[in-house]
Amino acid sequence: KCRERDCITVLIILLAITGLSSCEDILTDSGDPRDKLTGTWKVDETAGALKTALEVYWVESSKHPYDSNRIVIYNFYNVDADAEAVLRGSTLTLPLQTLQGGYEVSGSGQIKGSNANEITWSYTVDDGSGVPENRIAVYTPVSL
Image (tube, rainbow, N blue to C red; front, top):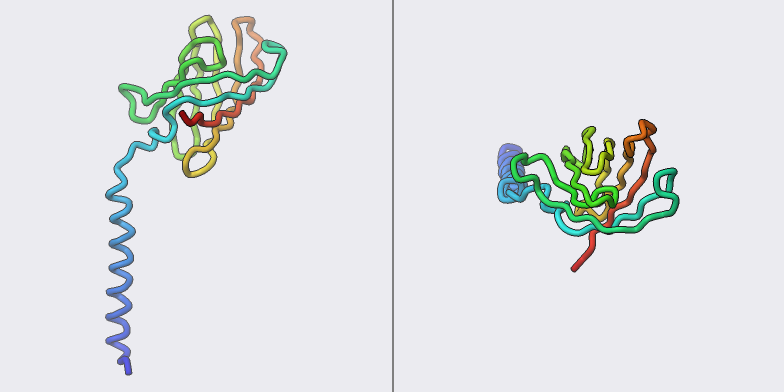
């Protein structure tokens, strides 16, 4: 028979072991959350006034060299220009920026899946005309 005090002691020990093993996972997972976002992505982008057909193209993303919260996306909007996005949790924010060629962009992206299986972007683009256009783009990782 288990005395009440002995049962409580055993329970506390089990909880402590469980808690320590959970902490171990957190402590040993020293990976950069941006790692899952780097590489080549296939982009399916909606049509609109600036681009009259559904467009499929590829982008490359990498970690920003100086800011541990940012990624750089090469060929953003398929205009051979680089954009920067800020990562917070499962959201990427595309702060207002002017890309090479005069395209002004801003918006956000939602990362889906624990392995970043998809990013759905919603952003605006202004080609310099002063008339912004709303865009939806879905990024899926390309396995090489």
